[in-house]
Amino acid sequence: MAGSSLPKEVNSKNLIRVCNLLNTITDEYAVFFGTMLGIHRDGDVIDGDDDCDFYLPSKLYNEVKNLLLSNGYTLSPYDTKDTFTQFKTIIDSQEVLIDLYYYFDYDEDYVIDKWNFFGQPHNPDKWIAIPKHALFDFKPVTYKGTTILTPNNPEYLCKYLYGERYKEKLIKGKEYTMEIIGNFPQIIYINT
Image 1 (cartoon, one colour):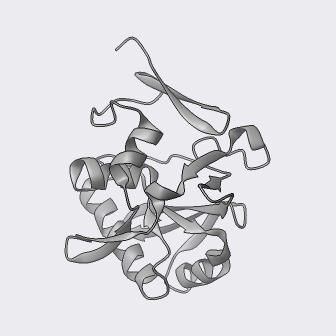
Image 2 (cartoon, one colour):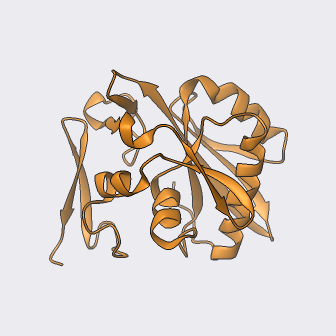
Image 3 (tube, helix red, strand yellow):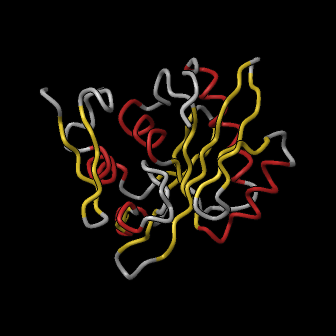
C-alpha cells in the first residue's frame, strides 16, 4: 500500500485538512502509527512518509467515509469496510493518502486492531491488542494552528509499537522487523 514518499509540507497539509474535517463530526479519532510517531517524536509528520494514519472506532466507518467522499477524497482499492480504509486526493499536484484504521472493543483493558502493520484482518494471530490506558482519552494537541487528537499516552504507544529505540529513525525491514506474538507487537532489531 505504500506509495512514493511525499514532501513533508504536502503531507502536513494533508494532516491538517483531514483533522479539520474530522473535528467537525467527532472527537473519537487520533493520529496513529507513523503519524503519531512523527508528531510525538519530531513534532511533525515524518519527512518522506507517504500518508497520514488515523485510529477510529469501527462504528464511525460510514460517517467518516461519507465525510471524506463529500470533501474531495476518493476510495483506494483498500476498503475492508470497518477494519481499514484508504482514501486519496491531490494536494499541491501530488497524490496524498489517508489510512484509517478501525479498532474494536475487546475487553476492559484492550481494543483490537485487525489490520495494523500486516493487513490480515481475517487472521486473528495478526491482530494487535492496543492498551486502552495508553489510547484513551484522546487528547487535543495544537499542530500548526489546527487541533489534532493524539492518544492519551503517545510515549507509551510509540515504545509499544516501535520498540525502545523508537526515537531513532530506523528503516523497517533493514534495521528492524516486527512480529506479533500473542496479539502483542514484538520489535526485533537487525545488526544495529
